[in-house]
Length: 338
Image 1 (cartoon, rainbow, N blue to C red):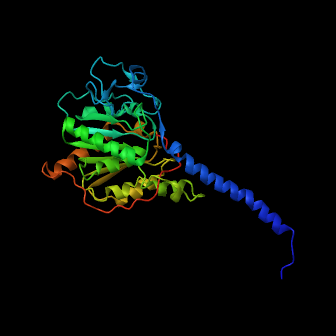
Image 2: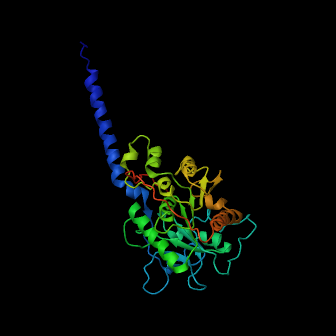
Image 3: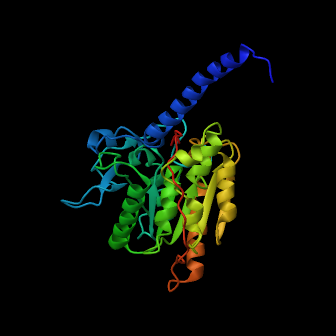
């Protein structure tokens, strides 16, 4: 029989506040995860806030009286003042070098449409740099806006963003026809994976920038001291979404990304079916990658997607095989800035 020690009750008592604090932290992360994952700019589109950012002038899309706002395209000449990018020190119109201006706007008939899904913070207006980067390559660019962002009604969630993104893709295809390539960055990469691989109408190709593999694994790696995998609500499982997709998939990984660790993108890329191609920016972080993407890189990435699509022929659009996708409970408690 062990002798009684006054230290044992004291030890038990000292553990109580630690346990209470740990449970409180779990509860806080569970209750606030949507506020941490989704950081929308709720400002509705207007001439004022669309001309306050550097870059091309924007117009709401779809155009036409009575059309419900879903995103942005380049404004017709003189319709809206030129805008400025909010991350001017990092994001600029892509250049081959600091002394070489970006290519002029291609005025010939577009070779297709790029549909862009942005990251978790701000709004689609903040991604106007895609237009001067991609339009000189002969494509039309549509910047998709999410429910709950940029003045659109609704609350962000995986189900809501994916369903809305698929409807936006359907409307883009109805307005402009094929080909349509879906691009996404950060949170938008997870949306793009599910939108682009939609069995009901897959995109011609998919490009994922600073992506994660799946959100529960990302949350667990960031919050290792919590059972984060089981706390998140939205799965955003890009690996599962793309397993049955046979169109081309490009992936860009930022080597210094401290928000979505590079190994997340590398694991996703390793699991992707072909055709696929990876680009690695060793000195870029999660938000600075556009500053390192010169005009040559944008051309290389876009032409690779086009070539892979052309290689299958117009009679062989991408398809998605019927693969059972088991969803984990999900939605992370991490500020995935961008």
